[in-house]
Image (cartoon, rainbow, N blue to C red):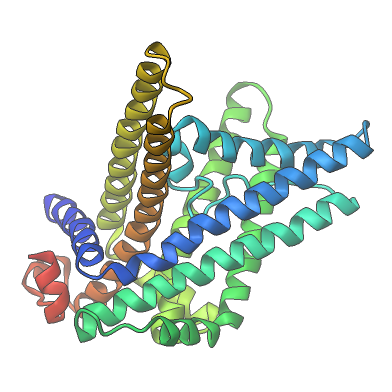
Length: 334
């Protein structure tokens, strides 16, 4: 257990050091932040427009607008810990604000927006995976953004299948949650729905490296991810907890700084001064940077885990401490 815990922390540290040494690894994550703002705003605008023209709107579009509003409120209030955690709105493989139901025109439009949102984030996560893999196996600076994009585009069929499977898992989780009632039975259904969500989100993060790195089909990547997860469950678990804890800690720190700065500016009557405007812009840029880094770290963590697992899959757990990963990964883990 301690070996797995240490391995998970080392891979998180390796992800941070790689991003610090090669800033190009972070670019896809910055684009993901922009995409999250864009699609979240688009869903919110669409939901508001529907309400204005349809006062008796169904629960489906109401839920869409509510979740989109919550996404933007997390950003505005500084509560990014929830949005950036596993299955949160900023988790590229998560469910977060992407849950809705219904069969009317508004729901279908929202479905198309969500599908484009999911595919955009998955594409960018795949680009990050390809860049990190090149960094780990060929050395720093070896990854090219254009080559990484072409590699992901060539695997889009498998990514589409991953999207279909995610939609099915999401539908099952939503159905279970809708059947949830009071008492022990209701609690059990709610727990099962959350289990389906978390399990498939983690599976998606494991499947994508197999699709991008090895060019596997969806089913081949699913088998590959299952094999890799079966021997690294503790490492994956500790790594996820570590990523979420790191991001939550930084998020609360930034939120506290923002609230403190606003209070001081308000108490001193400086809200309309240029100095406060500059400070607010710097704070907003810091929020974008932190969000992008959190997205990058999760993708890089699973890529590091994948590269290590390729080397370690032929030996037993007791022998894995002696496995020497590729030199760039060994240097990152050092």
